[in-house]
Image (cartoon, rainbow, N blue to C red; front, top):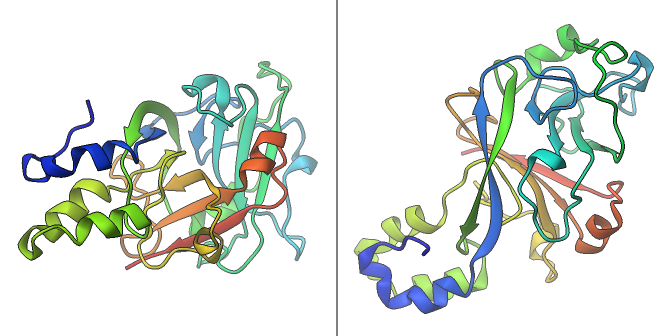
Length: 244
């Protein structure tokens, strides 16, 4: 049963109607295999020439890689393959620049033919929002509605003023995750306010093990339409980050 603070039990039925499956991301600080789910390190690469470049011809910043076979299944998401996340390598984490998402439906598990080190690590490490490589593991759970959702705003109107902060803390928890509800540090991205809300493809939030943080207490999100996700078409992604 989803844990709800006792003082908000009177909202249980309404809260439970908002529950969405999500996979929370946890980190282990260690060296990873080329095909494993990871934060930073070396992406799955057969050749250096396959590393993505930005519109200026410069190497992009490799953020993360998800191996869907290591992740508990989520409706609409692939059940196999690797998904890589790259952003433009700038000190503001590629804000207002194009991101690049690469999907390998098939991949090799042969370290002899794969790169073991990021060929552009020295060029990107100064701007990375984390300090070291980590293996990603997943925790399957359910998540209740968060701020900027209509159901959340309707419920908080019924909360006593002195309990509002506790309600926000209980139901607006961030954390790195795939699927579920995003937690916006400031305002939602335009695509999320346009009616048909896109799917949260990835959220990276502050974490002490990975020493990850975007700006001052910030996070980042990648969004995709349900239709594109179903088709495994990762060419039209909305990327955003914000901090306090």
